[in-house]
Length: 632
Image (cartoon, rainbow, N blue to C red; front, side, top):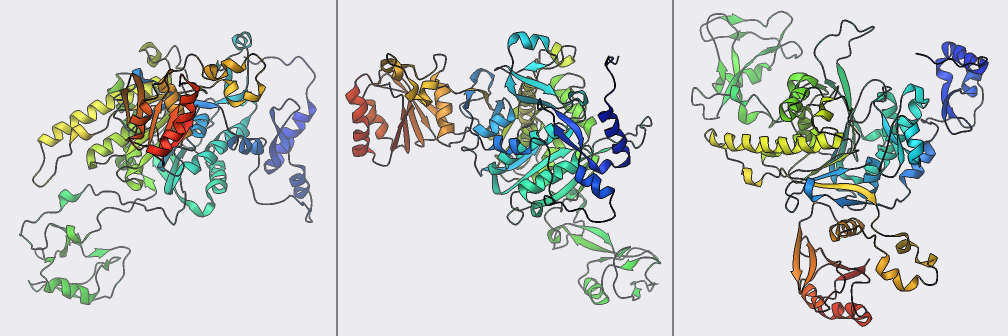
């Protein structure tokens, strides 16, 4: 039911609507005094529409602008005091896995990962909200009290930051969606390797705007392709205009000159046989005529004396000299009577794969029906998402882009299809691709099957999907290894990484006094060193923040040792050694120095005696002079 405005009409709004009907190109967006987006008119463009001479505009230039763009760029460049906290109980094989699942606002996560994964990600795939009016949840910059929250419709994050749906009634239209995407892609670009690539799924609603902001962020010269994916095959006869059956996948390289596109593996090699023991190996028959190929016009004479002209509207594939050469090499299958001969196409001579095309049909990449079936089979639930992506689609993108050991990032993880696809591809080709999934713990609808099944957030769905998919893939690999064909090599299922480390975003582990000690008042000085770490933080929490602060990756192996009564963390053999205990036994310095670590971190208040704290650096200079020592 519409709510009556109970006031006189706003003639300005009415006039704007009339102008929009006549001149839709002059419509833009601006902000009112309260900072809310609203429709507005670009008066310079309106003047030009009403003038038969050029109207000067000193600000005219080729660009895409919207209210909030500068603020979005500033936000992308501003540091945040956030960190990640490990969650071992929700992880799978935490100590050994190289995969990562992060719960939290993806913009904050991208900022947190900036140092550790700068220039290290080979492929980014995201399936962001399409801004269709009810699918866009974003985090606003202000906080509300619990009382205010109870009066609002919506949700809040753990800090009270309001989460909104970007509906038409919210009055924010394109601008908020553009700002949301812009600030995330600006940060994400820096995470890509020089030969990295980003794939972004989108529909017709925002594809034009997405292309523009990607041209600006990645450079229009690095645009690779607009892939058209056939997401549904059925026709909706209830559609008012067209029955939409496709999505776009916009593709940009970090630097297109460096990007090495891979070929899609052939799936029709079984068609090649060697029934006549041809020394050149397996072959299949190929026609000698084509519609779109032209060579000289000549007569072919078969061994049975039949003479053949080229068929009408078709052409010989081979020139006359090449044809005679194929005949001389006994590479022709003549056939009977007046049938046209065929030539042998040898497997050894064909390209080792197929060049991908920009049309991904459902047979090649699956569709939403397949995707829903996957989720239903794994989670034993009905439709959880309207248009999920099938793992086959994401696997195809990974085949085109990645090699073994590459890192794949998806910061709109949803049901974690990207992780599923990476594990599946590793099981097929023996690769060791690693994934990083990022998902906001958005609440599921209390009336949904997912909620009733115990999935309170989208993140819980994603994590459980990875657990179940990993087990299934490993079981299928074991069965496949039992049924190998002659010449096929088994892939060791024991080496397939189906685990993942779970991390969740939170405020920094350190109290404000850690960052601003100059603000301490008299009487606080003595307790400063003891109290600069929040009381609820564990050594695992501290280690994670140190790893991120030092620019190390989250998937590095971590070993925990007891040395002389103190707990010591050893990361990647000797990349980092850390001890966050109180009352550290000074004798462990010699033990740690013997490992020749690159970096060592202690708590500033960890040593009982002040002279021990002072002597640590001198001791390392003598025993391991290359080690960099830090304290928190």
